[in-house]
Length: 428
Image (cartoon, rainbow, N blue to C red; front, side):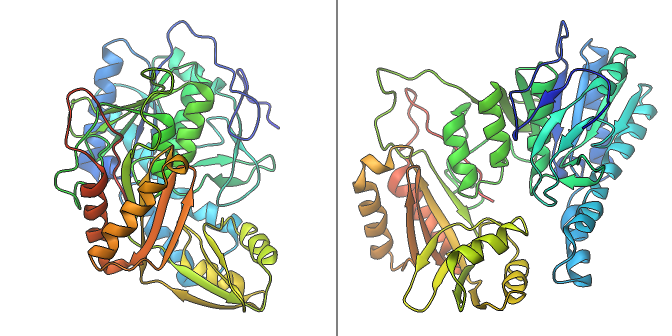
C-alpha cells in the first residue's frame, strides 16, 4: 500500500478509521463548488479559514472544483468519446479540485497566513482501483499533521484519491463530501462542517415548494434516505461514513455565519421514537431515465453496467425484456455500454422521480394509498411506482415533477409545530 508517514486509517471499504492521536482535533471543513465558484468566493473562503486559524484553531479544508468545472470537464470527455477509458476520465476530472486548492492557497497567502495544498495522493487518501466510483481504503494523514504542526492551513482536494498502483481515482459524483467526512474521522474529529450555497436542509426543495421549511437537526438515517432519493445537499456515502464513524455533519451556508442543519444521531422519544411510518420529507430527481432492454438477460446487464461503475435502480421485468432505471448515470454512458454488448435498448429521458421518504413505510400501506390517490386526483399518471423499506418513488413526466413535489409536500408534511421537527431536504 503506502509508506506515507503518520497513523493509518481505514475508510468505507475496510476497517473502522483509527483517529490520529491529537489533543485538539482540527476543524474539518468542506467547501462545495458554488462556495469556490470564482475568485471572489475563493477569497471569502480564504478569509473564513484565516480567521479560524488566527483564533487558535487548526484548519483542514476539503475543496470541490470551482462552479461547474467538473461538468465542463466531463462534457469535454464525452465529446471526445462515447465511452472514455475510466482511468483517463479520472485523470481529467481530478484537475478541477487541484485548481481550487492551489488558488485558495494563494488567496490565504495574500491575507498574510500560510497554507499548503495537497492532492489526494499527497494527503494520503488511498482507494481501491475502481475508477469513477472508487472506495476509500485508508487515510494516512502524516503530511497533514506535519503541516498543521507548522501552523499551516491544510487544503485538500476533494473527490479524489490514489490507488495502490499510483493512479488517480475519483469517488463518484459529490465525492468531496465523502472525502471530508473520512478526513474528519482520520484526524480524530467528531464533527465535519460542510459549507454550501444553501442555508440548511429543507422539507423539500424551496425553489419548488415555497413553504418548505429548514430544520436545525435531522437524523443520519433519514438524511441517507433523502440523499439516496435525489436530495442534492449531501452525497449518500458521506452520510454512511458519518454513521459508521460517529461523525456529526453540520451543513450550512458559506455566505453567512448562521447555523444550518446538524445531521446527527438523535435520541428517540419513547420506546420506538416517532410514530412508525411518519413521512420525513419529499425528494426528487428532475431527470430519471427509464431504459427498456431486450436481447440480453438481466444479470448480464447488471454486470456490464457495474463494470462501468453504474448501479441499476428499479427493475421491472416484462415478457420480451425488462425496464430499469440507473439513478445519476449519464444516459449516453448507459446506452453506449449496452450497445457495446449487442443489447437492444430504448430510453425514455422525459421522466423524473418524486419520492416520499418514511423509514416506517413498510408498516404504513396507507401512505402509498394517499400518495397515489392524490396523484390520480391531480391527473398525474405515474409511469413506474416502486417502494423500499424507506421510501415510495414514482416516475412521472418530467414536466410534472414540480407539481408532484408540491402535491406530495402538501399531502404529507404537516404545518410547522413547535413540539416536533421533521426531516428536511434540498432535492437536486
